[in-house]
Length: 408
Ligand code: NAP
Ligand code: MG
Image (cartoon, rainbow, N blue to C red):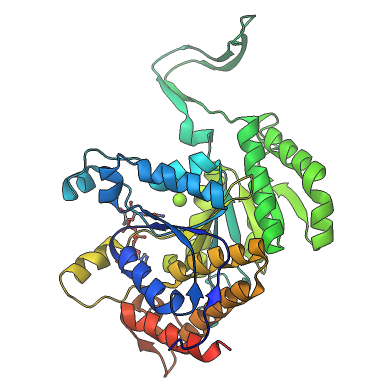
């Protein structure tokens, strides 16, 4: 019960509401864990799928602009419309993914970090600290052009300069019979933005950066990534990293994979688009649960947007609508708020806000470690006599009780 004096959050925090079960939990988290303790100025954007539809998705663009104005946002999970969703919510069309729109506007990189608790052990036994994955989200095979080859002939790569001049060409393959070809690309500015976002987050969290490519084989393409990272680091980050006692480390992707599995964790692993896609799933399952994965979008200009890595937990929401009991896990949503509040507090130089964020995280972790948890966690946690499954709201109530005890 909050009879304590409320902590003032000095500057505006951008809030993006969302859909389904996460929208239900979002409300509870605010009512039970935040509003009783904080006096916040929230710039609220309702990204509910129906409201995006009503505004022809302008609300998403406004939210992204607000993050650029205020510097920090927190976002609930949102539906990315598909044909099924268009029917379900009677939408005008299948609007683009809000995360995609915001990421493109901020030119940002998404970093995912698992929340660790003592009673859920990573499947990979040496991991003691979280591994944060930063995946480059532009180009490569996700934006490719590919072709089936029916018979003998020559495949070429041709570049035609925009201002006229001789095209340059290289032979890709001389086909003796049927086969396949693929063309991929990336751009220097996109790679540099990616590098900047990675160094920004690592400095923010005081963790080392690992970057890995297949530059031994791909002597122009992957080597370009390696060179841009090296140049960006040397020019803008080396001194700051040294001062913070952290390092930038480049190694071959094969070597990085082998090292990561044997490491204690505790670093940021920057990965090209495909490597990041694959490795983030390996890391997520290695640490135990999708519901314990946090996510932050970092722009190269230092804007931050925090969210949970999971979706709207649709299946639980349908049960909730039918009045059935649910046991959905709000940990990653809570950590989205604490991430945003901590960053806000750092930027505003308000240590009491940072301390509140720290305490709320400790309270959430202590609750799970005491054995009180949602069904998804109970299934993977150490079997202990005190373990108790709680419902969606009961979990948040239990955290609120712990928080109340921990706050001064
Ligand atoms: P999801 O919401 O991540 O849920 C998939 C399954 O993972 C759930 O059914 C549940 O398993 C488990 N799970 C995820 N989060 C949980 C939590 N907090 N507590 C307990 N269990 C949790 O993925 P989805 O069902 O494939 O997608 C639903 C919607 O989310 C889609 O419309 C998609 O577009 C959207 N989405 C949004 C984001 C985002 O905004 N960042 C990201 C991904 C997906 P059980 O059912 O086995 O209990
Ligand atoms: Mg994947």
